[in-house]
Structures are given as C-alpha cells and as structure tokens.
Length: 610
Image (cartoon, rainbow, N blue to C red; front, side, top):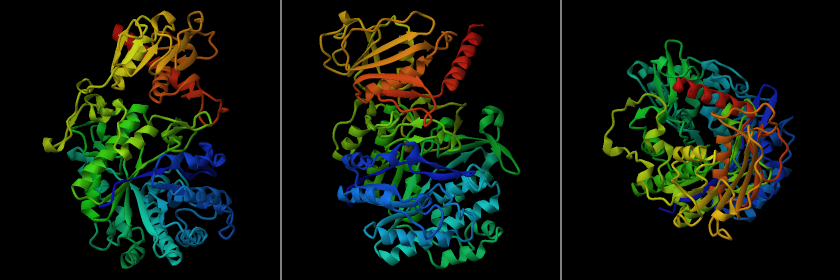
C-alpha cells in the first residue's frame, strides 16, 4: 500500500441565500491573492481540493463561460506539482438559471462539467458536487439555503438531482479524459438516541449513506429507502441510476466533532435551541460527544463502517476544528494517527485532508449571516495570510518529525470535561473505547506566567485549565527553565533577562474602570495590546470607547503565542467580513456577543453568591 498522503482544501462554498450569493473566496480575500496557491504548495500537500465554481464561471447563461480567474490559479498548482481535485458545485444550487429542483439541473451540470474538463484535460480527480445529501438537507428540508424548501419530497428530489448530475457530469468528463476519477465527498456521522427515538435514529443511520448508495446503484426495490423515494415520484430515476451506476473511485468522508448526534425524547433536559422532532415526536438533537458515556467511535468508527459497507478506497476529505489553536492541532493529529492505524488494519485509506486552509467565514450561522471567522492553517483575519502553528504540525505529520508538545495532550473530546449535559450510558465494549484521560497525566512543559497578582492572572489560569495547557506562576524569567514560553503580565524589566531565549508574551492591557497603565518595558518577542478591559466581575465603564472582553483577549493572545507570532499586535471586537482589514490587528467576536456573555456570567456569579 502506498504511503498516506496529505491533501489540502480551501473552504470554497458558493451558495445562495434568497437572491444573494455567499462566496467564501471573496469573504476570505482569496479572490485577490493569487499567491495563496504558493502558500498551500509550500505545505507539501500532494493534492488540493479546489473549485471551478459553476456559479462564477457561467453566472448568466450556460454557454457564456469565463475561466480566466481559475486559469491562473490552476496553472500555478500544476507548476508547483500539486494535484487538483476539482469541484464544480460546493453547497450551491448552481447559477441563477437553474436550482436543485430544476429538472434540467443534471443536464446543465453535465454540460458545464464537459466544457470544464475540455478546458483542463490534465485534471484527473473530480468532485462535481460536494456533499449532495447535506446540501439537499439544508436547502430543501430545513430551508436555510436556496430554494428554501421544507418538504421531504423536495429534499429527495434535490438529492437525486445532484446525484444524477454527478453521474452525468462524470460521463461528460470521462468523454474528455477516460482516466478521470470521482472523489465523492459527504458528511458522515452516526446517530444515537434513547429507545423512544429508535425509529428516527434508525432512519438517520440509513439516510446518511444515500449519496454513495445511489451512485453505487444500490437503491433498488430491496433498499430501505426505495419505497420512500418512490412515493416522491422518483422510482424511474432510481431504476436508471441502478442500471447505470457511477461508483466513486474514492469515498470522501467528511467528519466533524458535531457529526455524531444524540436524540433524546426528554427535551426538558436540554436547552430550547436543541429541540426539534418529526411529525410524530419531539426530541432534542445534540452532539453525541457532549452527552454519551463512553463517547461515540467518532472518525475512526465511521471510516470502519464505510470500508465495511463499500470496500472502496477511502479518504478523509475534510478535517477541521473551529476551536482554539491547540485543539485544532490535536484534532488534525488524531485524524492522521487514526488513518495510519486503520491502514495497518487493512483499510485502503489513501489520504487525510486538512480543510479550511485559509479558515472559514460565517459557518456558525450556516452561511445565513456574516457570522464569525475561524482561522485555518493560515489566519487571514487582517487580510494577509499568517502561518499558524498548524503549518509546522502538518510538516511533522508527513515527515514523522517532532510535534508541538501541546498536541500530545488529549483534545477536549477525549477529556472528562467534554460533557455538557447529564451523561447517558452507551452500551459498548470498554476495550474498544479510547480511555478518557486527565490532561495532568500527560507530561508537557508548562507555560510560565509572571504576575500572579495581576488582575488578568485568574482569567489566564482559567483559560489554560479549559484548554489543558499546563501553567505555573513564577516571579522571574528563570523560575521554570523547562517552560516552553513566558507570559509577562506586569512588564517589569526586573523580572526578565536581557533578551528572550524562548517565546515571551507581554500583555499590555488596561481596564475600563481604572486609569491606563503605562507601557511595560520588559523585553518580549510578542506584545498584545488591548484597552478598556471588562469581565464578569468588572463591568465595563460607561466612559470606555474601545471595550475588550478579558476572556476574549486571553484566548487570542494564547493563540498568537502558540503560533510563535512576533511583534506588536492589537485586538478589537468587530464583525468579521465587515470591518476594514488592518495589519497586526486581531478581530475578536462582535462586542454585543461579548457583552451578553459577560452579563450572563455576572448574573451566574451573583446567583451563586446569594
């Protein structure tokens, strides 16, 4: 078996909400930065999932296509030796002259695919439609995306349209390049639930395979979904797909920490935003990782299931964790290690894909609003890609080199504090479960903090505890020689040596209810500046003009330190994608959200005190 490959991918959704198209490349600034391709190539990825968006190449008429923008990027990939896995539709519904429910969607997509293959005959791997099942759910069952339907029949029609479009697109592509391969991606998790929700759980666990089952020609009269789809008038199209299957050359599994779900009919145990149901029953739908004990088998589990079901080559086609930097690294490293272990067990797993190399924008709103920016391997929040600690990690994974020590600490999903709700037992052989370890059991060099009495010290200690970053307090820079970095809260030069010999962060911050502090004079490799701090125990001053929520400052500063960033940085609350980009400025979440969290935290503190 050939070696495990590292693939990369840019979050590249172009989807429609009402009459507005949401373009991730525009939001991330990638459309104005051709040099981004070189940054990706420098990572050593063997292949890049990269779109040739139907919506942007042929937005007005099917026969009027402009590939100029893509020509430059794709040729650059080719010149740098990076293979391309070309996508055509990524969570979209096509240009304005079609949509997911249009009976001409498959034909129009195939026409576009054939023309695109003729333009780039050297591209051999294709994903005509990314995650057809997920897109159909969000667009035609839940109503989030165009055409904003909430009907099961429309959902099935949207799915079959995309699958038929994929099969016809691959036929058109292979008429140009007979060697072309289909890399079919789909989000894959598993549903669990209480006995009372068993019917919905069973249905979900059949439906999750629908994209690949349809392409493989498996949805015939004996398939558990055949009757349901036939009731929507799709029997003839199912029969046609079964008669001329288009099985993927590689099954692309996208799995997130939220992919595994738990359904519970006892809705009173969970917050209102988790409540949902079907036409017969109400239930809460929550992340399985937050409630099951022991936890779900996760990525390794669904990969084993996919291999057992299809016996086709697999790839993990999206690995991303929108979290703090060390948790991003831990998730990526675990996916890589799981892939290696599965290969040793005989699973034909070809690659692991680091997704969202430039981050993503607005996924916390399901792309229905501006939302938050989540950094990727590169942080582009100030308009210029900045390498994060993910860059050396990816190189270490491929080379087998040394990883950042923080990676060896279990991720939050592997720790006891992952539970957000009352634990629900899951019958499972304990020998098959990865043990949940206390982070203190892992030997990792600590972070040395100078300034135990500083008002920011408790916030820093809490953040490090939540993130499983070992921390020690000291009086001088020499107090913990084994520490991997130093955080100086006071800026007193008497505490420090003349020149930093390891990463040293100086937090230069003033509170909104106190006079401004004079700048610290202690040497540092990194300085983070913030004004008008407030916290749960220190409400914001009415006179403050540049408020900064202390926990958000600490989170951003720790990420910069882990990234080994240098120089002076400022932080500010704002709306990602709507603010002018300023060099060395980290944009925190909108101030309104921080104020709401501060008010809730203050109320909880007062309640406990009472």
